[in-house]
Length: 355
Ligand SMILES: C[S@@+](CC[C@H](N)C(=O)[O-])C[C@H]1O[C@@H](n2cnc3c(N)ncnc32)[C@H](O)[C@@H]1O
Image (cartoon, rainbow, N blue to C red):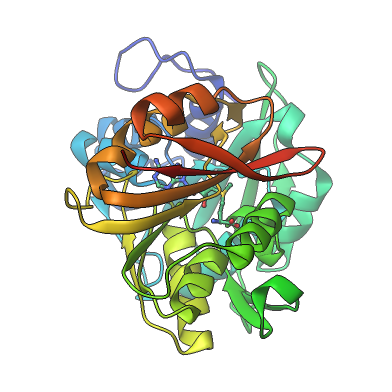
């Protein structure tokens, strides 16, 4: 294994990216000049730049829209992983998700579209890696091995793709009193709560079920994940939209709505960017509390600041959040009168009405 300087000549602080590029260079001695290389969840476009620096043409599957935009700006051609079109790539370079379900789903989708001789090199921080990730890859690739660690990072190599019957999106049926009838989820592996009903989401559904929620009007599920809240809203007869920044969530929400035979307009978007001013009577959300692996409440505070713009006068925003988070004063100042309508040992459900 060789350790080379950052491929684009810049100071690249990320040891995972550097290890992925170095390991890929080792298994593809001829390099990728003139060839297509798929980059997966290239969080800061450093892999995209590495492929370009080696004369390759980067294609990208990126789950998070914000990261997808960065990769596109760096020169990658964004592809829809749901497309299923064969990809004549020589290599797949990417970040390994700590979530085994996400790795298994990715491996299945890759094996269905990549050519026989492809080399897959996925890297991560050693502290986020387990043998279960190797096993998940090995269900779709005949050969899987781990590199030696370097700077607390490691890669998994996979080759010999074996397309089989896909297990993802995975179907689960939620049967909870507050949902009314059983609700079928069809979730991608990377989606929040993996097709289960999250404890916070359950508390929010119970609170909504107890009302008051109008039976008509325009509603939004902000950060829809598997789509459980969006389906709940649509079942209530509300004209329902759902947005999520994760492509896996967008697919999962669409599939949940289809399975329930309800209409939900689903968009891949960052927060409320696609939502017109004064267009909603109701926003519900179990908002994000992570950015990547790190806990960070800034994005949710920014979404709270934007709620007043999209609500109609008298419109309401129902949020569930971990009780230690600093949202209450912000909801009161940015939206309007806010009451805690339900709480348990961990979560609060708040209802804020636009002044
Ligand atoms: C805590 S999960 C809730 C998912 C689902 N509503 C549920 O209750 O199971 C938060 C969701 O917000 C999404 N998200 C995170 N940041 C976002 C952003 N900037 N814009 C839109 N969605 C975002 C995540 O992808 C995730 O699906």
